[in-house]
Length: 257
Image 1 (cartoon, helix red, strand yellow):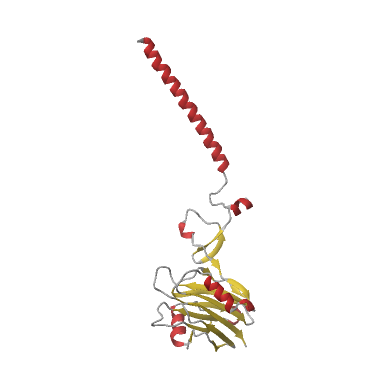
Image 2 (cartoon, helix red, strand yellow; image 1 turned 45 degrees about the horizontal axis):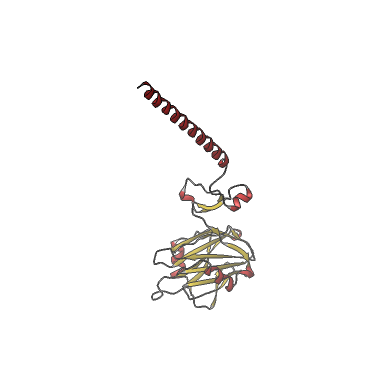
């Protein structure tokens, strides 16, 4: 009986020794892996590996585009956007606008808007008001003279809406605001494409009142694939053309006389 009891004790000792050895090896492997991963981010892709650092992403924080690293602990900051392109005035062509609207993808109602600054002073972008729809872009801070901006908008995903809104630019040197209306409706049985432009005194952010004035009270132009011109006041004129389709474009030149 004594030898039997001694055998059990020896077996237990061997088992405990093996468990201790396995635990020690596992701990060492874990420490090695932790050391290898230290300072590395799971967000790092090929570009990050090449640069040796995490590539920053652009996100919108309170409506402002910021080029800084994404906060992985705050999902509200994961709205990635791009700034609308500022190009030479001569590059705002119908072909460029068609290419821009096609790049949006398979969306029923969408529009590309090309506005050229043919005046003497730079345009400062204020905001875009959407009566319906949205955009995957933000306006650039400024559009200098002899430059243009190509901006896109589309219907809201999963909703029966069009892409309708107003863009506003402030001309600081003259204390006036240029507002541009674009309207691509969802239902063409009831509505058509419309556009308009108007200059207001002072600094005026786009809002529902501006939309209501431009759409109903300030003689908008129908999107009929034809060029139309109008005086905006303060020695400014606008000449533009808008297509009639649901995947359309608006080309607008704003000139200082």
